[in-house]
Image 1 (cartoon, rainbow, N blue to C red):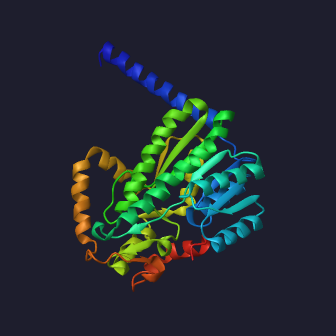
Image 2: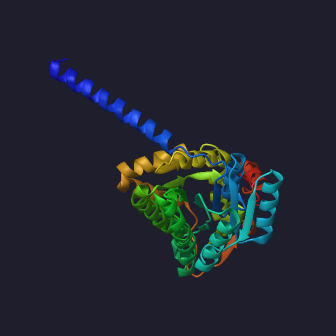
Image 3: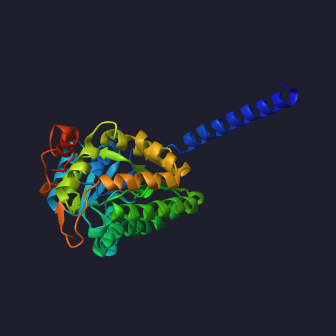
Length: 340
């Protein structure tokens, strides 16, 4: 090796060392203690939202959760209080701006402030594009884009005044790669990802850190509460199997832990599960090939007549394969996470 090459190698090694040291220092400086902090979680009554509430409550956070179903919300509140957590539970449809503003005022009135906002509320519509209606797209956009926008605008003035706060937006791998038979969901999650990334860039100088979370399939137990269209039993089957099988999906408890760690350290983005990380990197390098592969996947999915735009809940769409022993992990998660 020539002297010039040696100097370049030393400079490169020194640069990597400086970068790693700076990153470690920045993570330490941004580290967040949730003890005594108020965390507002939308869609906090079941699934991932409830898991986040459990883990944050165990770290000493004061919890505010909201959802649309009163019985579901009451069960979640009762469970969290039995665990010894301080919790405020309120009915709220995040697609209604007035309800969101009333919710934020109520939480601040009870706890004095909101330190962390987790935009988690979501809907899933599964089926081919020809049976999706304008209403399906509007519902997805209202829930995944306008809802997080309303909550963010409601909490931001106080966070800016304090020059401190955390916002976590639960997007999806569907907000990075548009997936067949999930078009309203993917389109709305793309909107949320774009909003979240731009928001971080603008708010960082004001002490408010925004984290974008893009999970792949998680075993939250959610398929029974999703909406299915077209040949709904077949749609439910492939969706449930993907949501349950190890290797394709990840434990929702582990996902919640990684989301909280990302918020704690002020990470810009976290993509959850190894398959999702591989898919995102592959799509970034080969977008055209990804599109071609997804078009092949689409050929394997159920077709449906254009005129059949009816919607069925997952619990109305059971089949011989789902639920079955193949979906056992997801079914157990549903019982644990208030999804039944």
